Image 1 (cartoon, rainbow, N blue to C red):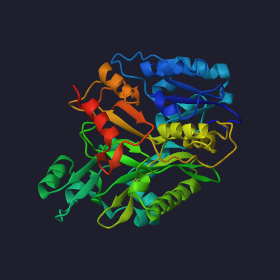
Image 2 (tube, rainbow, N blue to C red):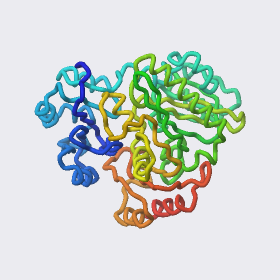
Image 3 (cartoon, rainbow, N blue to C red):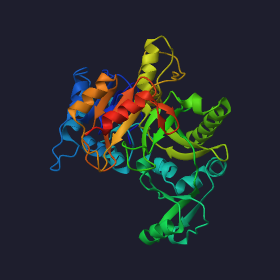
Image 4 (cartoon, rainbow, N blue to C red):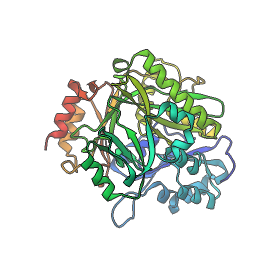
Length: 417
């Protein structure tokens, strides 16, 4: 890849424009994304700084980030500004993205895909974390599936990659284990003791010298009608953290995140990563469940809530602004403060594509708007993919796994056919 760019034009290239909206588009921070109804509505606000590409794929699917980078109009855009003056940022780096950037001598600001894979892969992660894994992960082993032994206790089987909960299986009986073993007898699995309790997300930014912790959110997981998968993450609620966690538990999560961040920092990681943790209600202990070696999906709305707090006079930078600055060394805000803006309210929930829900009506969108929520509609078609993102300035959860009045109103709208 090309050398680091000093004071670059930052070009965020993304399949879904929502991923890039953690900072306001400017002449110094511009976005390339697919042309969708939502993206067009955003472009009207920033016509000179957002560049939309209409898909030409026969199946109508949106271009992924690699295809966008390889699009002729993007190559022209970068050439017009001068490749030496552009720093590219993506949601998640891949070898294909790296190859395109290397071929064109473009500067890609994200950490290497090799390091990301080592951190995120459920198998290599165990070796990578070393003593940290022994300290923070639930009891676990790496085993060929056919060799897993049923010990009459629920267990979790995970493959190397598990996106939005897919690739994670809860086994409650010998017969369920046998079914998995017959389907994937030779596959290497990470076998973990089942942890029962609420889960939480914390976004973290690393630069060369500093570690910035975001705001802990309660992770909304596996609740119908938003998903049919028990382990699928469907949202975040920042209002519930201090209701479900005491100060000792919050401190334990922050210590865990800092310890993991120091490990990543020493290996050259820069920018965002996220951890998912779970409190075992039987052992009353916090366990590390997952490391997302990329920009976590909750980053954008966390940053939007932080910007609203800044408008009310709270000083600091958003988690996304810290991310872009850590990657590029540039400035994305007028503030000189380095601390992250605190938030203690707000939520978002995602309706995923299920067997029952495969489209959203205008009536449902209007009803959610009337309730005071903003929505982002996605043109996806695959099972369990994002269909509708619903965002609220206030919390929607009463407690773990149970909606409050606002949340129940959303459920009523989404359940209406």
